[in-house]
View 1 (cartoon, rainbow, N blue to C red):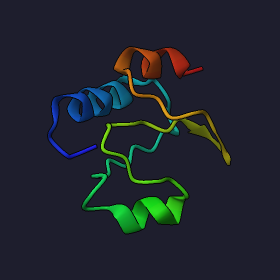
View 2 (tube, rainbow, N blue to C red; view 1 turned 90 degrees about the vertical axis):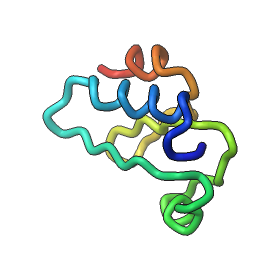
View 3 (cartoon, helix red, strand yellow; view 1 turned 120 degrees about the vertical axis):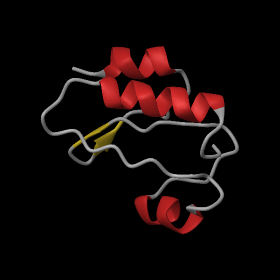
View 4 (cartoon, rainbow, N blue to C red; view 1 turned 30 degrees about the vertical axis):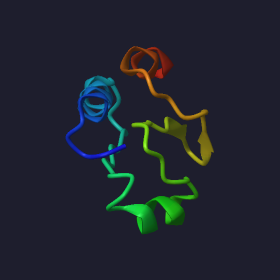
Length: 73
């Protein structure tokens, strides 16, 4: 998604609310950060998405902030 859009901001806020000492939140813009997304192995998307990963295993992309918060162990 695009930096600053309401869904993008909501997902970022939900990610920051996750309780983990080891979490890393990397906010990326789907257009501006195309190269970084490709480096991480994610396709650019017009829709704001979050990827919840533990180690090298990632869940399917999450588009709903509530679902992101429920995904946290």
